[in-house]
Length: 164
Image 1: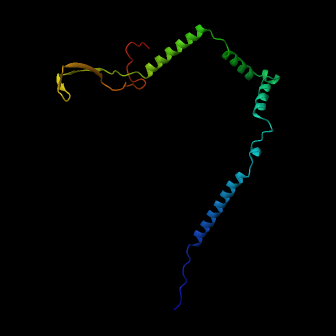
Image 2: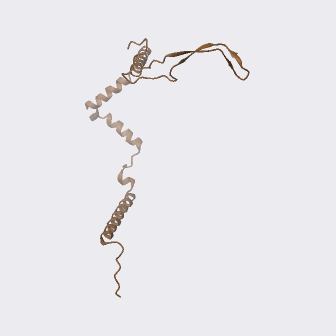
């Protein structure tokens, strides 16, 4: 009896794929580890300056001769000046009233409330409770919907009394 050679587990293609995947994993691992070797100061040098010094240096450069001649800097200064203008109490009230009125009109015109009709129901005379107490007949009113319903923009009618 001659012995037949046993087939080896895994073909050469499977071994090659396994070697390639191990090599790829090793390269990825080395790449991740090399990220830890870099220091923060190498990536973002500070030149020994603190945040306060950087802020003061930026402020002094803006007021220097090169910055005042630029049109961009003049526009910034003009905008700052208009923001710092004094406002009187009359102007403040006018601005507040105008803004509030426009905001209300915008809300009512875009998201108007849908009509929620009141329903009237008559309750007939009846006996109530354990002791059968007589209750006279009465009417009550309740809204059709539990919550206010709003129309999508452009969908519903305007509320009564609104002109805009």
